[in-house]
Each structure stands twice: as structure tokens, then as C-alpha cells.
Amino acid sequence: MLEITEIRTDGGTQSRVALCEETVSQYAEAMEDPNTVFPPVIVYFDGVDHWLADGFHRFAAWERIGRTDIPADVRKGDRRQAILHSVAANTRHGLRRTNDDKRRAVLMLLKDAEWTQWSD
Image (cartoon, rainbow, N blue to C red; front, side):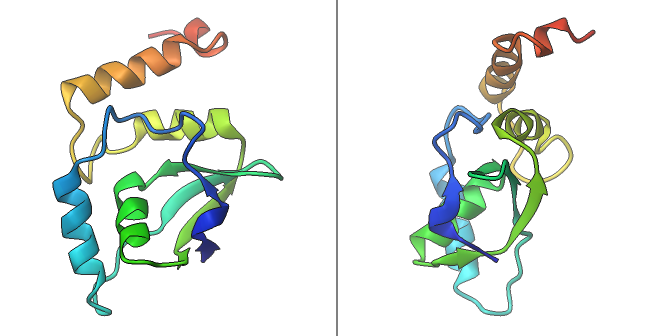
């Protein structure tokens, strides 16, 4: 568990164009039931900040229902690693990415000096 206020969502780690309000509402409603279990969000900790990498809809839903601490899978890494994780998220599960989401993810990688050198 991690205090929700410790998790940074302002570092450009969100690879979606926008959150889906319908999904956040559905998650928040389901989270009200104590028998419903959601996977933890994934964050990268660089020694100072916890960067949200996966679980933005879950994070928003937990925040909406007033949770102060949320389940979190904390991994060692920095903001760049959180971004890399984020652009790979939801390829096989969760809310499918739109074409605009996919485009944004590619553009995020193309803005990074190291990642632009990767082969395609």
C-alpha cells in the first residue's frame, strides 16, 4: 500500500490522450464493494518520487472514492522507466488503447534522445 499523495501523476508518464470517464466511474462503483479486488497500480520509485506508470484509471477511481492509500507495485526506476512501462501498458489487457493513444505513445518515445536510437 502506498499513500495516494505520494504518487506523482504530473510527470508526463500517462501515455493515453485522456482518461475514459466511463471507465473511471465503473471502477469507482466496483471499488465500493469490499469483495471486488483490483490489481495494484505500478509505480517507479527513483529514491525521491513515485511515478505512476500503469493504472491511471484505477488511481483516478480510488481517488474519487476517497481512498488515502492504494495497492501499489513499487519498482525501482525513474520517470523515464515509468514512461517506457506506460507506453507498453494495455497491449493485452485492460481498457484498449485508441489510435490516438497509440500515436501519443509513439510520439513520447520519439521525443527521447536515447529511445529514438532503438531499432523498430
